[in-house]
Amino acid sequence: MPIDVLRQGFVFRGERISFGSFQRGIHRPKQMRGPAALTLMTAAHVPGKQPAYEDEIDIESGTILYRYRAGPIDQPDNRALRAAFESQAPLIHFRGIARGQYHIVQPVFVTGDDPRSRTVFLEVGLPAADVRGEGLVSSPDARRYALREVRFRLHQQRFRQDVLRAYQHRCTVCALREPALVQAAHIVEDREEQGVSAVVNGLALCAIHHLAYDRNLMGIDPEGVVHIARRLRDERDGPMLREGLQGFHGSDIVLPRRLRDRPEPERLEERFDYFVRATDAA
Ligand SMILES: [Zn+2]
Image (cartoon, rainbow, N blue to C red; front, top):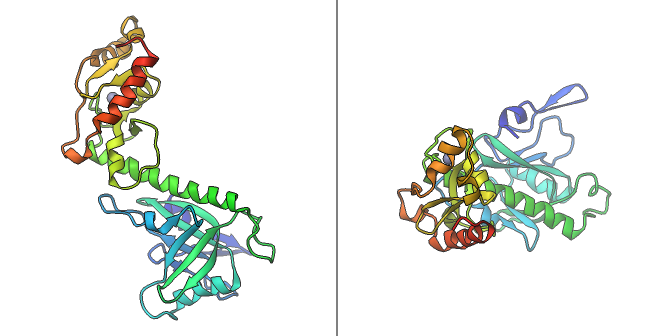
């Protein structure tokens, strides 16, 4: 969800209510009767910096760690956060996934409060299923699923940013640099790798080369040489096929400058074996 939309807030009983300034993490609209916050915000990961979310989201326990705001423990924002624990009020959690883009996790409940570490624990509930007086009623499986979804989106977004940056936003095959057409592709299936290393399982590819790679019409061997499937090489068609695909058969991909950003040969090999098996191109 783009921040411009969120900044509009929402209308309740004829009055516009703010979701918060998105400058600060904890927000309690002035119209709220109760003491609890309404929204919690976590800023997006800054490209190039180690993101914090890996420590913050724990699939096993099904919780998201959320830190108090700096300053006194009873300053207004922290009071509103802790009041959400006491009243078990449903909250909206905005997770920044890219500049100006938020993933919305709601409702979340504060299910633990640890003033010593200045941390609360959030658990994801399911819409409408959770507010029944006896607290959380969503099954642990459903909550874990919701949380996994959050982490997957964050991971996906970061993978995309890291890969595109490493390849300077160019298709590694044809060097196209149109942002709307260049995508981050996985070499082998995403096993939810964590950390910066995920970029070694990525390639920046334009839409047509991404699709060709995914459909095994194009392979990239461990040396970084492009192979076009024989079926396509033998075909006669217009310039798109000739120049966009056939013409790259045997050419080298353009690698990222930094060694640590380059694709791992083992992964390229694993994927290339699959390509060879799937086609007669070898
Ligand atoms: Zn391309």
